Image (cartoon, rainbow, N blue to C red; front, side, top):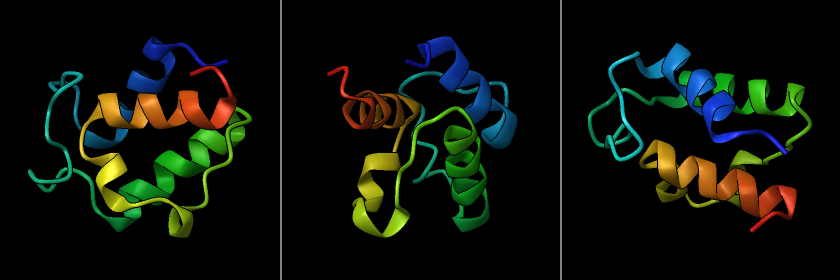
Length: 77
């Protein structure tokens, strides 16, 4: 399973280094469709497959939401 630190590193590379677990990256416009696809691609490279059309966009509101989703998809809830 991916560590929280590794997932945050992927998100920070796309959304900015100054984010925290609870930064509203979606509402603040730091996460757009291109950056979402990039994050999902990076996660897939790490063995976590998430279909963007099968998940409510609100699941990507904060880095913590994304980490929770990755844990859910990897079966380590």
